[in-house]
Length: 523
Length: 115
Image 1: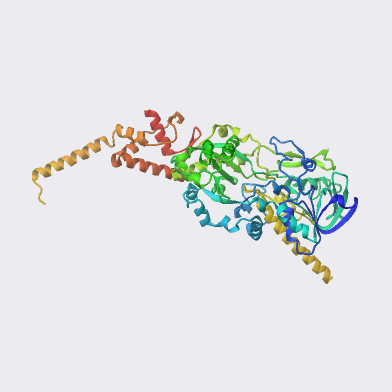
Image 2 (image 1 turned 90 degrees about the vertical axis):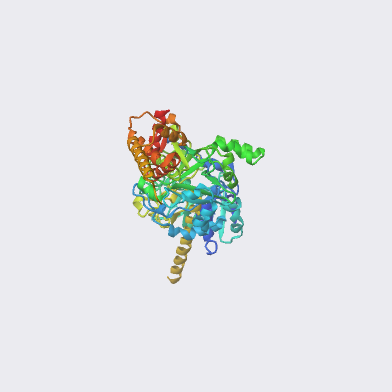
């Protein structure tokens, strides 16, 4: 059932079994698991069914760090949340990316890939992509047959690849895809224009009793539930925990000081190196292909451990070729598109045909850009300002530092490693750019709006905010879902993993609620 | 097959003089190395080679020796394989932004010295 706060008597208290705060990919995935349980579930959406600028204003905040993060540009307060902005690019974490990395403090997940595989499969189905194709070696080889990507997959390669698949617009917008399901559901309610302004503790301060919700027209309500799930993104989740500080002065779940801390994204460093092909006919450019998958290479795990670097993705682009894009595919739109691409530091888009035509069209000089995993660092953190939004919730202050030593080392060492790979194959040489050598390449505004790691998952309460089941340490009934619980970030787009983790949390809640009711019946 | 005494002596002398010539010269001559450098393709421009005091006389002798025994074309193939192996075994260095293998680096110096 879809409702609006204005349709509820102002000041009333609504009671449910489960309250999910947020209706993005995370919130919807948790709710979907609870669909047939008979449990009364409410999903609280800050905005309406569609985006409204006055609710978008609630995302505003400030930056105090040397690097700027656009706090209001990348988030949507409407049904479906930031899933409406997502490009749909999916790839799972690799198994070793859950492991503790000896040279990255605070790395390591308390769960493994095996704990998520079942949910990655479910998430792939929801997104209309193939789970099997992420892992099919023959698929990888066949897909890139004739390209040098195939050669990068050789036995002694310094690199290893990933397959990315793109979920179509109709599959990736969960707001659109599942609206009807929730509309028809008798047990799941979606309440629009219900911005949570505070989490209210129970009498023993050991769990959440209720949440206060408001709209911008002054309507208010109290939502009580047995279980609460925060699923409103890696900026809003910590904001609400920090803002709910009536009893715990540093905020709920923050005894370790990790709420808001260890923010991560995927910085993209452009103009790292020039690649000179020794053989003009070979295609080594990164690219997306007609049936919506992309191969991206990074350093092999063995190399990463040996060189003590983070994960990265190597993007080999052909800027100088972009004028040829419109030559190959005539038409003004594509011509304009190629001009547009030329003005930005994005990878050029090629299809197989372009690659086959390399001899005719390709430039011998390519550009290397690198997207980076960030380490979890305390200094990259979100805190609250004294200033408040129109609903009285303190604004976010983001402090995002310049790239750390290990990130810079990852960029340089990865470029050198690519040079070794191309040299060993005899297909190219690499020259690090003057901008990289002078450090200028690191001065950038990050265009990637991946928000990760501000309520991290950990084995113990000393090192994180939630346990392996996404339950907030010290709280009996408060859970968090979304990329804020990621202890480390890999380099893949986070939404696919957000959905898998949320499905897992939904499954866990389904089971634990069932056990609870069985115990009640027996008692 | 019978070989006449004269033919036997002449052929012996011919082989001995060839061996002596090779032994005295030791390796191929300077024009061979010029030919090798002219035919050795590199995407790395010689102008990017920094001035260095590195001694390459031993390397030069090695190339001359290869040229003497294999000729230019086969030497290029062999050198390219050495370079590939050096990239694989990470025997590389940074030169003015370029990541080059040790052998490649020495060839570039040779090119620069003879430019």
